Length: 130
Image 1 (cartoon, rainbow, N blue to C red):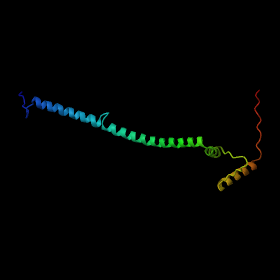
Image 2 (cartoon, helix red, strand yellow):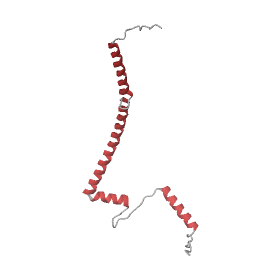
Image 3 (tube, rainbow, N blue to C red):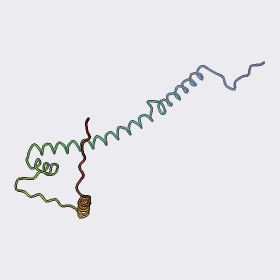
Image 4 (cartoon, rainbow, N blue to C red):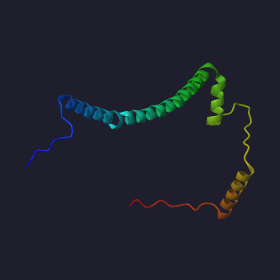
C-alpha cells in the first residue's frame, strides 16, 4: 500500500497556526457561550437593572417614612390626624358624624329588619361536665 501524499506540506509553522486557531476558537466559545461569558453578563445586567428599580422604590418609601417620622416628632397636628384617622378618636366636646353611602345604609337597615324578624336569640344551655 502506497502512502498518499498530502496536497500541502505540513510544516511546523502550519501546525502552530492550526493550534493557535483552535485555541482562538475555544476562547471565543468561552467568551460568548461559557458560564462567565457574554450571555451571563447580559443576564446579570438585567438583574442589576431590576434591583436598581426596586431600590429606587424603597428609597422613595424610606424618604416618605422619614418625613412622616419627622412630622410626628415635630408637631401635635400629625399625631392628632393619625389618631383621628386610624383610631377614630375625637376631642372632648366634638360631635362625630359618619357619612355612609346610600347603598350601605339600605343594607344595614335590611340586616336590622332581618334580625328583628328572627326574634331574640335562643339561649344555649352549657353541656353537663359530669
